[in-house]
Amino acid sequence: MKQISPRFVPVLAITMSLALAAPVSASENGWDDAGTIAKNALVVAAFAVPAVEGDWEGVLQAGGSIGGTMLITQGMKEAFPSRRPDGSDNKSFPSGHTSTSFAAAATLHNRHGWEAGLPAYVVASFVGLSRVEARRHRVGDVLVGAAIGTATGHLITSKANERVQIFPWGDTKGAGVDVSFRF
Image (tube, rainbow, N blue to C red; front, side, top):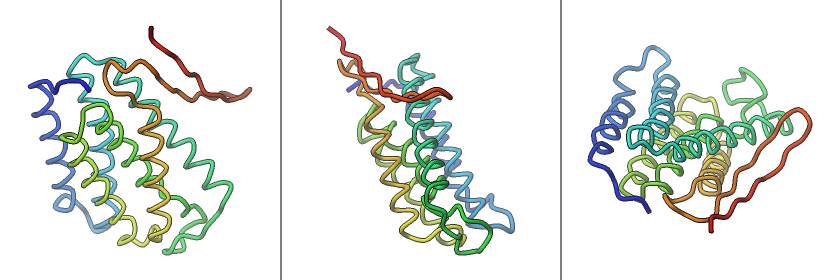
């Protein structure tokens, strides 16, 4: 695991402060807006923390983790249409906001340890709660989203200087998983 840089703390503190201040910033949509702001703050943190540290491998892994999670989530939304509790559409299962938030949290946790992971998981849990409170998802949608994001984040993101990396890929002609080993 990589030692936390002194520049890491202010970046994470500012990002998490924005996320926790989200309910104050929310408009008439309340929970929905607060959850979206918190999710976006986590995604920014997942990219910003390694970028500030000059850890470009970490930036790429954050992209793979979050991007892979989004692909899995969207695929499941199409494969298993489920009416939202508010009746707005058939894309309730699984929760994309929650899966993305947990992917960002898992990326921060796996790359930077529990000191980054714990507050990130708290914010990701708030995102899941906000989706249920906003009547955009059921508890099951959120739990599956959290599992997808956490699993993908941990599969794709390696600890700094780890020797084995797993990275899924896909395009219009196919998909696969690349596994690389450092000697």
